[in-house]
Length: 300
Ligand code: B12
Image (cartoon, rainbow, N blue to C red):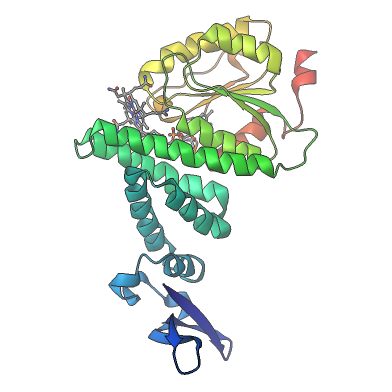
């Protein structure tokens, strides 16, 4: 294992690649310089000898000191893809920890996990990844997000006025990672979330909402063929006794739809095309009047 040491000289930070070696003479570990890397802010992956480029300490250093963050993310994405394929959850958790300590949960999901899963889909579509391996990747990603969710739930943000959000997918939609990621992110922000994805029949969603009493319902669509089922679900919600909460619809499955002027009945329904994780909070605030608890006012 190697480390990058930064030394400050006249206000500038300079980096050295070092490794621990055992000093027989003194009977203790000493650090040996492997390479001088120059200005910390300019350290790039190419400056690092090939055999150390994937070392976690190197990747983390470049992530927080260098302007080369994009290349570092590229390396991390490649690493994640390999780990998903190998179903190596421990190492995936390790990447999550290393990355999120500097960039946070949101960026981990938005810049690493989601793009890597999209890549899995591309590889599968191109016949470069067999179905079984695609499922392994999907299961490993679910396990990872579950672990992260448990951690997030262990340290809840105290928020007595937290909005209650119900996340679901229409019947027939089996893609559930997006919902888990949204759940995880919203929990980390103190929202009270019930995620009932994947594929729940409309009546069951409405029955659940009747008990949970959500301030907002989020529907996730991945396959465009499920748009029809979602529209039926929305109509049923609007016609039911729980017709109050605003409804947000998103996910890659709605990218192809054309949004017409919405009639009065649909004024609390928003199709959020192209909205990624970072756009979700502003959308929630908008439809719930700046994040205030709205269930009471709506029910009146
Ligand atoms: C994993 C996976 C599966 C797994 C799902 C397991 C599970 N429990 O989730 C399995 C293997 C079961 C599967 C099955 C199928 N899949 Co699939 N799958 C994928 C894959 C590789 C990853 C999906 C994923 O996890 N993405 C990562 C998450 C984090 O991203 P996300 O879902 O987009 O969510 C983010 C945003 O969209 C947004 N968002 C999501 N929901 C919402 C909601 C709101 C309100 C808002 C504001 C935002 C928002 O925020 C999220 C977080 O950032 C995708 C590839 C891809 N491009 O997505 C293919 C993909 C979606 N699958 C595809 C296909 C074709 C299928 C099958 C039809 C294959 C088959 N022939 O059987 C079946 C259909 C199953 C069904 N009926 O639902 C196609 C869809 C093509 C299309 N446009 O219709 C894709 C795109 C692969 C491809 N490149 O062709 N799949």
